[in-house]
Length: 411
Image 1 (cartoon, rainbow, N blue to C red):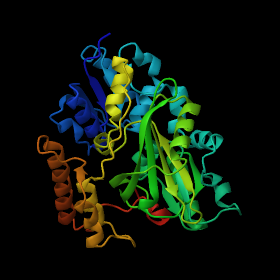
Image 2 (image 1 turned 45 degrees about the vertical axis):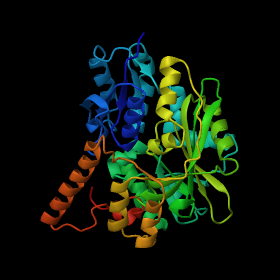
Image 3 (image 1 turned 180 degrees about the vertical axis):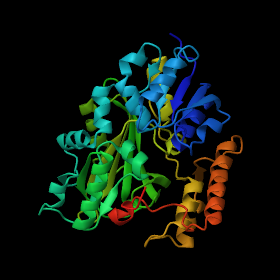
Image 4 (image 1 turned 180 degrees about the horizontal axis):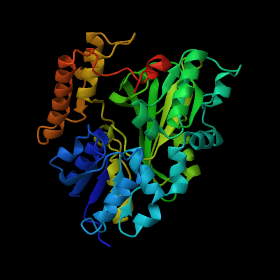
């Protein structure tokens, strides 16, 4: 069965990296938008696109679209770029595999990536240094005597939480805030867990990414160090660099991927704990990362490895090249650095430091400018609306570190 192209599910910056990488290899792509801020569908590397909304609440909407378009995309590969899409493919793996080449794990593997409780249990089993788990996000846990504040309230299934609250997690600084967070999750009927907060800065976060073949062997890997995140402390990378891999990160990531039976992208995030100098495991992802372009520039072309594995059957090996530069998502970096009020807000000199190095812009491309222009146009419209309504000048809401005090505002 021929596979003439790829259906990319999701259209954020990581999806843009995917379609550009595969376009450079002659692989046509279509993009399925799932969020209003998606931009990848505007790339000249995309032949067409479709839109599906509400997939966090109804993942089957993606499946319905794929079945409706099965004649148009017969035999194409399907590659998810967000957890909603990963979940949809996992839950319907057998149903879709007869018509598509799914570059995604089946449910028995994907549950280790989507359910944080299962993920942490697997990480502990391979010896990863996992933050202390205080228990489920319940009133009983909030009343416990073993809590050490501040704590993090994390959902078991991240994409549902993000769709409801617009953030990845809550931070509770005391028992009262924790109880409010617990009540929020209860009202939303979302399960969560209360976990130790690992202190430190954005630049203490490292992510080892590799591609693991069907036999469980890595085909090359790289470590990325985040320099700045959006939002700060609990967001996704907006400035990042390739670094030498600290001891243990590669081995732990590969062993974890093998334990859960993962074939494909394995990207594990760790945080250097300043209290003891140990790397604490945070999470494992099995899909494309936001800095796909950085990894590709440094010799780890994840989209092509996935294509060559699942489609051509001739899986190659990555060849890291030691590129010394920095990856910058300019849109996110400018907005969060200027509008986001935090105690560690960078000075102008600190902000400009990465820009003096060899750099790769996450979105901007002179030969493919529309995604970048759309990003800024959307922000300009939001800014104008905020001024018209006399809203607060901080257009980027501090929801991640918000704790319960802000989280309890009406949604």
